[in-house]
Length: 609
Ligand code: F6R
Image (cartoon, rainbow, N blue to C red; front, side, top):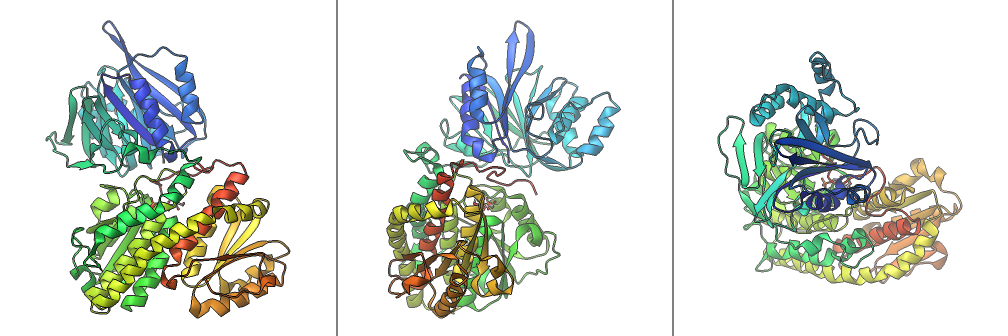
């Protein structure tokens, strides 16, 4: 949801900002803009250049300008307030103040009315411009004071990078809710929504604490709280390389990230296996977290929530305590019943999803214990949870989540096993055998990664349809939900996931000749039931793609394609079925000529409600 970045130092700031915005484009790609300081003699000017569309449009516009600047801020937008126009693009200016913003100012209407009384009127329809006007109205030569006073008035979420015309070479940053990281190295001072925009220059960085102001200059970064006290930020180090954030020869990030899954799983699982057993000691997650609870709530959004659906099945299977899975945006306003005996597990790739973060805060307020499963180090959800288990997927750039999802799945297995060990419900030998199966599933996933030609072929049929259904029961229903979401988000084909037994309670009326139905039948206890449901849709003309475990003899008249998984313990089929659904969505979107990595209207890291 909007990417922002700033740089001040010895290098050409224009180039650094454009590169940074390109790395941040996964956060929004409606429009882009840059503002920079231009000094001649004793006069300083802030120049702003914006374009509608992708960062490449901005880069082309800037290429024809002779810009020599060492201090600049840049923004790539995911539109919330106001349409996709140049006027609504960032940066926004008022008086001496120019800023870029990620987040939503909820009381912008009220502020706009007040500011009108001071003769300040917006030219755009954005909430962000109101913030620039507010800071300008409070500015009398002291940036810290103006920002502090403005923050007292602003309601909502924000990360700002601000330049003041009479402070050339300086950038001021502040945040509440929305993410911001910063780094200082010999190239200069950097600030951005995400480390991917900075990593080419520095692998060491810090997360700017909320309600603190960072002042970036070519000499360094000074962070103070609102009272003016200097604050020493904890430094973090990125373990992955810049190459991980590039396409590396693949046509799309999504395809690359699908192929990175075996490594991502290995990196996530193996540090947690000590003496063949799941172990969270290094993560600082004590067994006592699992022993004093009588209930688990898993809350997340989108794909992460689908990982939680599998988590519920696994935790209930091994621990026999009730687990509910809640969509974070519903949970936070749903008046949930939680107490100190509830463990709330949140799952998030970005660690910044606004609704999931709100769910953590609410859970803490209500006295529950919170454990988060997060991919991005130092993110808000990780920092605000009592305990965190980091997944090690590396940077996920494609908007459609793939490798972040399967590492979240792997964490669900580890949590279910460790919890059951802690409560004496799973013996060490049984846990060791489960872990062995989990590690083996990485090899099986590698085998299914070779099904690409087969799935590409199937996508020829799917690309032409308007509706499609995913079916499954239990574990396969959780997977079906993810399959349906993945297909919808990148191929724009309407799809629904159905618990196979539920289909006949209404939706089967939509099954007519040639409607594709992708059915997962990988679990023995419901295999015959799913097959009966397949017979039902088949007899109504559905085009059936059936996925089963190895060794199942399937009547060839039942389906158009039969995809057979490698032989494996059925507990671990999700790692293989995940690849199938990812490939189907990917190849279908490619065949439809769509922008796979940046689907329409979407952005990664949903930092607004
Ligand atoms: C879909 C997708 C989204 C995210 C959701 C939560 O492919 O990526 O549904 O899963 O927006 O995001 P995180 O995991 O960052 O909290």
